[in-house]
Length: 277
Image 1: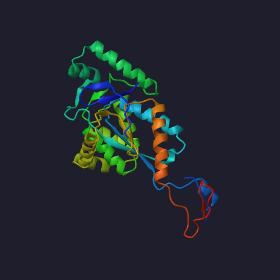
Image 2: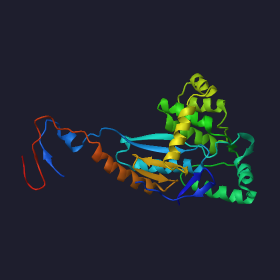
Image 3: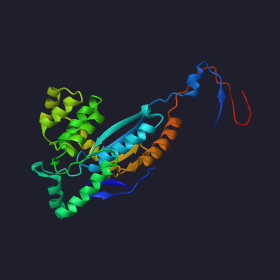
Image 4: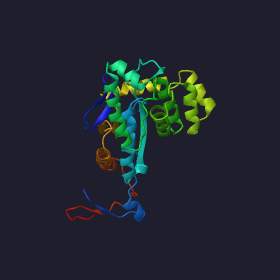
């Protein structure tokens, strides 16, 4: 099942998108360096998501499962990108997500609960316990500013995890600055610095830039994974889909990012046609 959150029509099923000489040599390098060629840079995986998207948390878990099985996982760099499903949403702590969805979608409470039950069951399949009865309707802009700040401290992934947990399982108001400061403390961010960031407009431009970039590359729903700027996976795909995309992108990445280990004057080699020089 391929699922994501879409900015204009809520929770929907979307489709998977795929964007689109052997030699032996002599050198002064060690055998280990030749057997394990060095890669110039890590392969980047960019993930557009929104804190209030239930499929984004599920997608995060499925991607993590694929990454855990990936042999070169230490050479993968994860970059979280901001996306707002509903930029004009007003935070309302008097309503939970069930009430909000029923009102905004024009659904009956029964239909809303059935839809939520489906998503909740999917979350359970990856070890997540969603509690929509407690989830607070909250605008996600400041949560995204918090994530952007956390990224500068090398804690972007930790911030995403804390915010998803706070929203979907703990029923916390993720638009509340005190809540965000507390979440920051849990991942090692300085409370006074976090408060200073949230009290002004810092990192607002970074959030808007991510959203603008998403529009430019045609992102219509989240989660949206861009691998090495060559392949994209849309929605909370099964782990196998992520594994295939990672392996394919990594094969190409290695070809294009190998460090030349030869030293000057040691270019002796043999070609496949048997000619050695």
